[in-house]
Picture 1 (cartoon, rainbow, N blue to C red):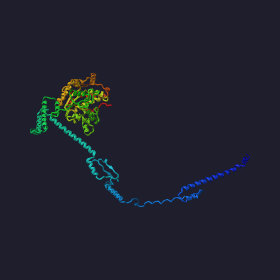
Picture 2 (cartoon, one colour):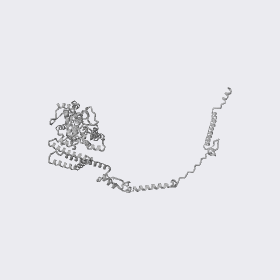
Picture 3 (tube, one colour):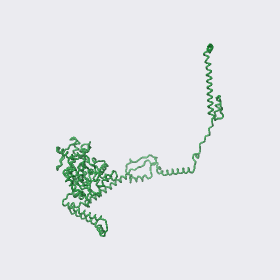
Picture 4 (tube, one colour):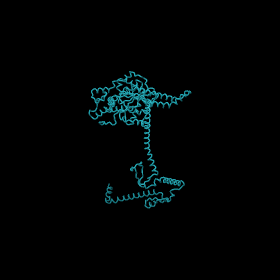
Length: 595
């Protein structure tokens, strides 16, 4: 312990200890520096190991590093080519390619030279179609290429003469229409001439007798030689054609018929019956059937059902099935109804709107040009134009009142017409109950259009007239009269049954179904008279949804009185006359705008 204490006592002063601590730090720094230089030297030796002059210097001196670093000498760069031959080797293929390119370029320049040779044209004239209108000229700046094409003047002249392809197509279409119209007019003239020939005997005078004699001489001269030749063939035992002989017999029958017509006319036969017989083909053939015309809700279905079920007239099929508003059936062919709807839709109309504007000629053009689908019409014509049928057909569709002229040109044989009508107010009330969108005014207007078109479009046909009221009053007698007149007057093929069974009448006639007739009669008992048209035909006030005195009420009343005028003229027969004056609905000014 004493020894340790002495060592502690001998420890130098504190300020002398700083020098002693600095010496080991310097030695440590020098040692670290030496190691760092050694590492650098070792690293350089590894990097420049390829040099043979590098030696391992354990002391890490700078001289060894400089001696070891000897950079490699770069290789000598290749000088770029200085001649065109260095880039392209002129072989035979190269020379031929250059010659071909040069030839094509020169040919292109030669072809375009006429188009670019005029470089000082300020204005390029264009077509003015022979007019002095300068607004069609286009101005082109100087120096513009392709300012003038060779042959432009010839092109302008040809274009002025021929027009564009579109214009020519329009012209061709117009020419076709005009040609078709001329052909139709020629056919009408031929028909008129034939009708004139067949109406001989309507006036028994000297002039008619001379015309009859002249026609007979022409017939004899035309067929006499051929008939004699035909008879000679028969005498020789040859089997020849019977066409000319039959034609001769038919001509004689036509002569007998003309003489018979003259005799009937002298006895005072009705002109309508005479016209009906004259409308026949004059060769003894019967009309294949008839078409029932009448406004919707006018009793056409009931009348058609009585004729079909009572006498055996044929409708074909398929037919529209019975419905809640027509429990006995419609007796309308589906294909005819669909085809009429297609005709209407192509002209922007339907059965209840715009029917006044129907164009029958446009419907035929749409069919010929394929603008409408005529598949349904083809199926209907297969039945209507079937010459092998032995039963007369009955065709019924209220749309036929509008589309009849179109179908007449598609039928092979001219049909007869059965026209029936009903009180306009009853029809309008029935339509209003069935169609919520149809007002009384709308229904009355449709009644006028349908009945007007039915009479106008069937003016040249043999017609039988009836009314819904007459059928309801005595159905057996009225329908029997219609059948007899179709067979005897209009020369329609007789039906298989000559008398209608009473059970058919009982099954079709139900007075309880005539709701609108009862309602109208009940209202008229207490209503005041609006207008008396004479002959016992009176228009009375009706129950309107508009306030009395309003513009809508006045418009509805005017259209009702217009319809009642036609109805009364149907009753007294004036509406069936050729010069009857129908109302101009197209220019009728309604007191108020339809809401």
